[in-house]
Length: 116
Length: 117
Image (cartoon, rainbow over all chains, first blue to last red; front, side, top):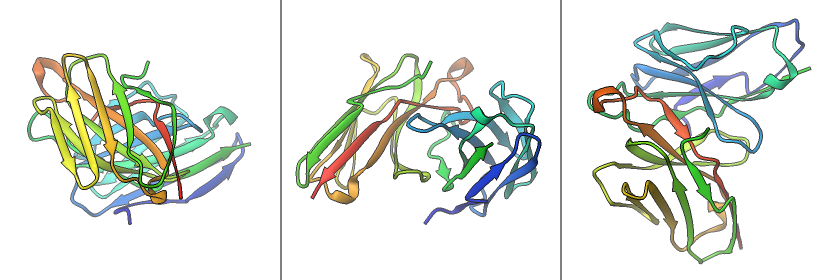
C-alpha cells in the first residue's frame, strides 16, 4: 500500500470549473512533486517543492497552481483547463537530498482527471 | 525529449522465463532508477543504481549500469503473471558542479511486460 494518499481518485470537470487535487504524506519527507502522465506515456515532471517552497516549475501553464500548505500536504489547483489536460496526475515525495542524489520517490495512486 | 529511451516497447513471455529490458540515456547522471506501474495506478520504486555502481540485485531483479555506453538493463528472473506491468527507467541528471538536480527525475518511454500463465 502506498504511503502517499491522493484525492480524489477520479475527477471530471468542465473547462470553466475550479477544482483541486490533494496529496498527503506522513513519512517526514521534505520534497514533494507533481507529475502528469498521459495514456501510454511516461510521467512528466510539473513541480517540485522543497521545505514547502516551490523549487522547480517545469514551465507549466498558469491554469495549474500548486500549493504546499505544510510539510505533509500538497495541492494542485485547477482552473480553466483544456480537454488536452486530461491525464493521470501523480503526486510523489522523497527525502530531500543530503548528498548528490535524491533517491527513490514514493508515488501516490494518482488522480485521473477528465476535462470536458 | 526524454532522457531515457527503453526497448523493447513491449515484451510478451511465459511464466518462468526471464525478462530483460534496456534503457539508454543521454547526459551524465547521479543515479538511474527503475519503477513499475500496474495499469492506471501509481509507480512503485524497484531499484536504484548509482553512477559509480555497475550491478545491483534485489530479489529476482538484477540491474546493470554502463556509464560509458549510457545504458542500463533490468533483468527479472523466473517471471510470474503478477509481474505483468509497465516498467520505466528514470534518471536523475547530475546537477551544477556535479551535485544534485534536486529530485528532477526524467522517465523513459517504458516497456510493457506481459507474462502469460
